[in-house]
Length: 305
Image 1: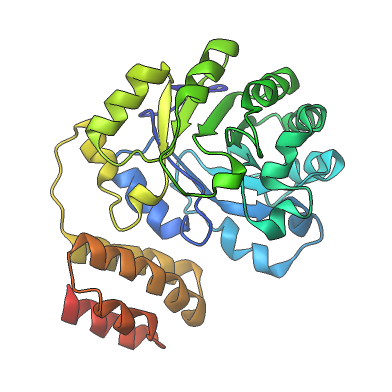
Image 2: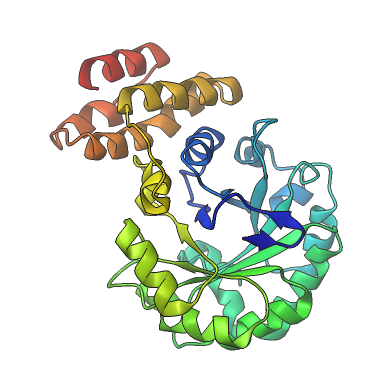
């Protein structure tokens, strides 16, 4: 699968999942066969104004290839400046968040709110493309009603290299089943790669969605939390799972980029998902969410995994 001039090693992508798509989990997803892994969403305006809180979100290993960042915002001029900035220079791909349903984002006219303004979508994509990088856009079906075909065409007109369609409306949040019919329609409408997203957790899901939509690839989000090996599963790549080893690798990578307090807070959430994969009792989540130090975290991993 290609995006712009980049050839990906597979057509299974890891989504920009807020609070989870950190450098360490991306490392594991790439190890298990993901073709592209995005950072969690980063404020374009925050980058322009050098907000210190964005630095952790941009952490990437030197050998992470390709590197992909997701930005959110609604100002083409900001995207024009940030896409060419020193902070974004290491990244090969810029994804523009046009699907986030969170009220705080939507109330600022960002995320899925952009789907109510297709001309602005074109302007933002065109501005980001001035960086010379590959640009992708992640949409939902629409805001309160389907509009993704018009939005995808606007993005393509602006120069987008790839479109991802999450099969829910903004008003659905994450309820119900993903509807991939609109991804199929987008694929028929545009001449750039299209990726299907939503409720893809198994090889059967992967094959079924690709056959139904004709999409070029799939994007996995929550299905990879605590299960980065899902990429090997769906791609039918032989693998051996050692959950404890993967957790320790994740911690070791994260330790290189985050101070202790940040590291522990990040891993608390991940450990709850790893516990689900390991089929530990739900009560063990109370242990993980109460961790306060690196030493406590390592002890908990040794005890429960």
